[in-house]
Amino acid sequence: MMLPMLTATLKALLPCALILLTGFPFLKERPAAKLHRVEIVQMKFSPSSLSVQPGDTVVFVNLDVVTHDVTEASGKSWRSPPLAAKDSWKKVVRTSANYYCSFHPVMKGTITVQ
Amino acid sequence: MKRFEKITMKATALLLSVFAFGTTVLAQGNPTLSDAEVASAAVTANQIDIDFAAIAKEKSKNTQVLEFARTMANDHQAVIDQAVALTEKLSVTPKDNAVSQQLKADAEKTKEQLRAKSGKAFDRAYIDNEVSYHTAVIAAVKDILIPETENAELKDLLTSVVPALEAHLEHAKMIQHKMSGK
Ligand SMILES: [Cu+2]
Image (tube, rainbow over all chains, first blue to last red):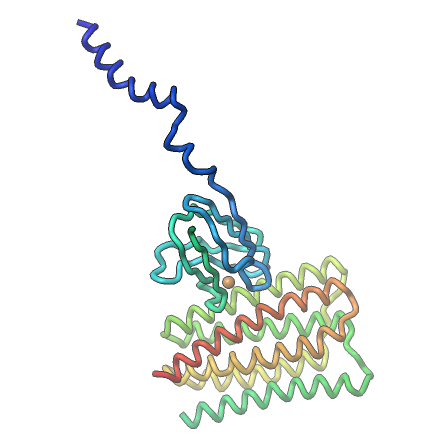
């Protein structure tokens, strides 16, 4: 009675075991994701243009006194919450984007995914 | 159209008068502004733009204008909070003076003119005034307040406010440009 069930479980676990033994080959193919820092200072994104690898994380840090945000420019496909002084916000980036601050539309930046 | 141009010209003239007045007061060499008076003028200049924004919030139905006004209210309040925190730290009590008084007197006239308008005419007058007001305040901060300030931290604070004022000015010009296109 128990034996067929056990076999089924083992069969299901086998691929997992193989992956464990081979050490996640599909993850090893690309280098570890990097963390990039964009400072918001004196009403500018710095650096205002940034090159990243797909899957990298960008952290935006507001060093100004006034509140800013980070809003995707083409169709607001993503947007940070309002970032008060000293606040920061992280985003994993997979596609290139132009962005701006919705409170101060003259503030603009670019992320290029290579 | 003509009416709002007149108002804009008046607003610009008034602000230029503050600037001219301030420069005259200072050109006489005596009295110069103390740091307590600079702090008062800085807080007053920021408070005035918050007051203008409050009128816009009350009168405008244009999303762009309302969002701009909200940013003005938030940003200028943040600057006031920072200035107040610094004066407390330095044990300086902002002191009323000729520049603050002139700013207030001019602002009262502008507010009256803004309150008399409605609809698109109001939106235009508000944004036109924001353009001239920020232009005048940037000049006053750079050419009067910063040179008059002795304390290094107060000087740094005023200097750090300039990019925000410039971003506000560009933003206001952007809206002004869009409005004139319609
Ligand atoms: Cu901003």
